[in-house]
Image (cartoon, rainbow, N blue to C red; front, side, top):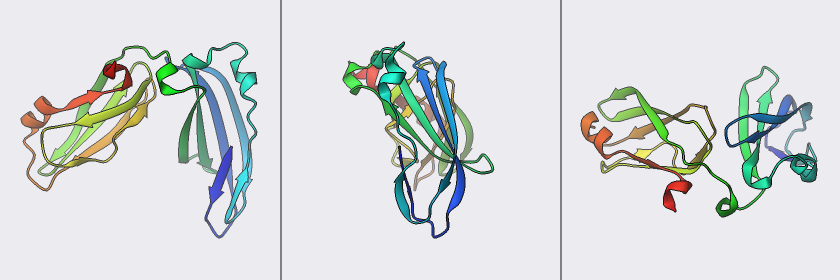
Length: 171
């Protein structure tokens, strides 16, 4: 696992790796304290993938890698799949959303799913853009997404035209 740092000063961090299934069950977990050197690209963890695949099928699992600063605040997160998206054994899941805040030109959503939702996309008939689109939703985790528009947003129209779909909805 490579970490790239463009900071001019080295710093301590925590590297967490979790092997999970598509329901969100943690199958294996590794945590390592690391010292990130300044202005470098370096390998901080070598992953023997066969070790993770002994008891698990590669079509049903993924690794969630998270880098935290020394106070426990998340710096970055990445997902690693063991196979191509079309070979994953994805389960049909519903993408749930809750509007947590709305103003004249902005709507904040909280999106979640019971199972892994791969390659999620959001769309609406209104002119504007989402703060994040085409991303994976991990099971039972909440994601905050904002829709911004130059025009005033009618909340009822937004709700009626909002479409959420994931990879499994495309076949």
